[in-house]
Image 1 (tube, rainbow, N blue to C red):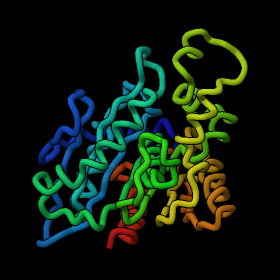
Image 2 (image 1 turned 90 degrees about the vertical axis):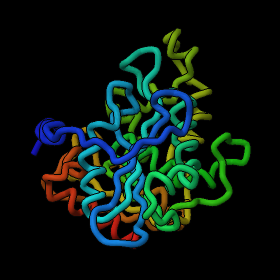
Image 3 (image 1 turned 60 degrees about the horizontal axis):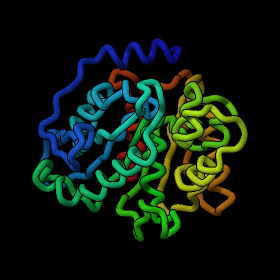
Image 4 (image 1 turned 180 degrees about the vertical axis):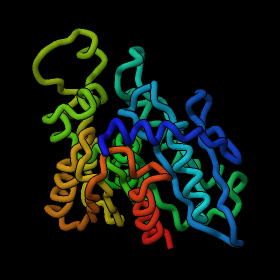
Length: 288
């Protein structure tokens, strides 16, 4: 199935209202939705979901809510995080440093917000998952302890059991070379001055930012990481997953890469697709 057809299938699912919502900041986008686990009793793993959409403003967490609800039906406690995206231009990708600020702040707020919103969630068994640009954010968040101490998002220990990244923008160098997502990585890294002036040449700010934001530059993590990717993904080509795994291997770390035949970009977050069941199985392996 083509990426367009898969996208139509994902967007055909109506948004699923959460069981509760909590704010982790004052901006309207600084919020997270909670989906309570179905069935059973006692503590269950927490899955944190980070949506994709090239970090652009026009894509929010609504489109991934059926996936979040699907995980809850499979017995997980789920927190779906919203974050600031885009910029002054609605078509621009990401807001530096707001996008990363928000993800770091949201995840650091989980111990305070989750107990009331998801009382059965076991924070000791937290797994991050994210799709596309959200997959990048999941990989980045799990590597914050690898950042230099002067980085504003640095933390000393990773509080996560593992990461299941779905078609992630995992290797910025290759993504820029291939022009993935209409130049989203370049827009995300570009300085405001360079973007406004349209200047040519090397953007030194972007070089520094890449060192702090590119998951392939933040290795090894010491965390269990699996990438699930469709072989037919034309939006985020599977070469990015391979390049990330190769970068990890050079640092002595094994990253699992599951490539799905006949699958494009969106099926991994489509509850009606077989690929989504594979994703759940990968999360279960890390969470339980």
